[in-house]
Image (cartoon, rainbow, N blue to C red):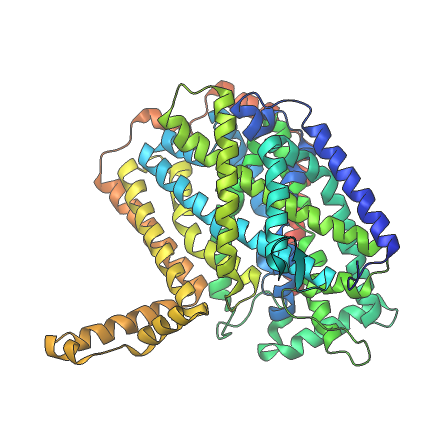
Length: 592
């Protein structure tokens, strides 16, 4: 392991962890996946510990190990809004779990077909698969490259018959192949089991990083280290607001009017309607297990600010502290802390936790994408296909998604923004339409199928349009640079003047740039308002929905179903949920 940050003790820990991982995968795969329910939802027999651990493990993938620490390094406390969304997970458990449990659906698009139409289901399936590839899958592979490259401290590796190649390709292919292999053959069950192994290791290791970082900064005093971190971050940001959640309306990057509503829109979509997350509660044995798993995940969700974002802030403070000798950059902040301040042995354990976290997160995304394709398209095309055939199709779909995800990583590598910010940007463009669709479908009985489809398509076009402009203006490359120049300045030819279209062409280019220049969270909010307005207006202009569809809304439970829901929770569930919400409120008060 020449050139790496590991020694022999780390190697022993890594081997032991790898053996434990292999045994866990083997144990979880002993039961065969005979049907779609087994393969995609782990047989719908997951308990609260598996559900809560899986939700948390799936969430703390690339966007946290690499992106969130990088965001803390660059922007301070700004991105903590997204990590204080434990209250949305509580809402998932109390408001949405009973509805999803009654429907017994495999996917969120399947729910939309019941509530609205097949068209809404198809559009959401396509959009969700696209967002999984554009954000979560590709970003996780990219994060794996950042993590492993930093830990191994190499840029190229020897490959038989090919000579030395960029380590990125070895990491991307190795990570995707290994994860894809056990996901293809193990399905959702193996993901749930590995999550239980990985979550406590990663949390423990991250707490150690937090402790060691503050200890070094404070010369032995954790309190002094915390004050030094806050002082360093405040000095580096606009008007010293880097340590605050709610910033001035004049803040160029994080004005409160953008970040408070915008992050809430994204949070509702992600935690209550996104297939990637909701698939975990769909796998629960019953409402009680699913709700308690959500409550557990809500508690887990209180930790990422402290174990991922704050270490990024600590890393920034360490780079500004004379005599420490610590160096890093944004997205490499967390891994650099592992490599430079943790003692050997613990360093190897945390590195294993990071890699397994990436693999667990990646496997969840592969499985979610395959579930959408198989259940929302293949089953519709071939309704009489056997359960075993659906499993085979799901495995093939997973392999294809692995390949597409690797290809999109090349785009992410050339973007000029931290990984976490890229992820939130894309989610900010794609989430408003989905949030309106589900909010209207679940909580408004008058919402109609035509209104849902039209508003959703308009919102999707607006989201992908802005994403396209982002890729144009933020990506390197000769062809892209020429396109940027055309859009910035407008290439007006003599023929344009002769045809009388020169002013129109120049105005068109200016409009595209102005659209891109709108703050991404303001764009998210504007798209949400536009989509909601279309939903309301078109619903009121079209025929009221069939009364039978009311049973697919929040108000449609029968007396027996209401009784079953009431029997599924206890006073302790309420108390624990309120504790999660209370912790979020206290955090906002402290860092307001």
